[in-house]
Length: 375
Image (cartoon, rainbow, N blue to C red; front, side):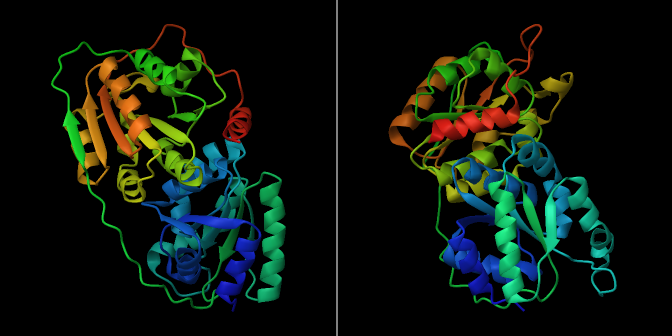
């Protein structure tokens, strides 16, 4: 059995001091250590945890994700289309529930059989974490080499590997919404390109724009390709979690996460996580056209969701619904001046420019220049 504090301190000495994850009984000691000793973000699900850690990595942190192996199914999208595609390595610990030959709950049986195969198929470097402390520390140093060379690495952890760590008392902070405002102005709906141009025009040298997957990123690239832009590919629903990790890692920068209604609906648990950790330097903008525009215009169910009220309910400090480009611009200016976590919901019309192109710069090149921009 490993002394978890000793192992955690070794991780910290290597620079791993930012964690995000989802509870697991096999990993509870490491989770408790991370909460006690490091920066820890409790994610709503495993995919969000990977995105949050990836955002922290963008901001210069060496980040760790913790999850049960059942959560690999939820984390598959960001692991394959964010970490792999953008070459954003994170260190992972995944428990081996359902280990063949070991009695466990029936829901873990299949995952226990395919955990190794899933990691290999996703091209994630991995190893079983040794129960011998000295050997485990050697493994950790080898894993760190993979991370430094740009490869995500996961440890698979069997039951009983980590020794107990007592969780310090957690003083949960109270958060609340201080401003919910909905516009009564009647305006014709702008197209997404117009909204993106208004956002881009207000992005100065300390502002980073993260655009969700699909036409949002493609249109932002055509509006103006800048080194402070990141165009998400895949990882649908993860943009605000990526923004959360980056904003927490780099409080000296302003981060605007530009979401779509389809992607926001996919991972609505992230709203509560964002609101609880509420970095003042994060703005979450939802451009809502009630459609999956990138895949042919199929309707979403966003027309029945009051996003501004929802963000207010989970305690975004400022939650706004705007109806015009002018209101959008004024809201961004106010956020840049006052600095509170802010959510903006804006209805837009469907449709995109004819013959819309795609970014000509590769995802990992976008990442590299953004890291250079962040400094």
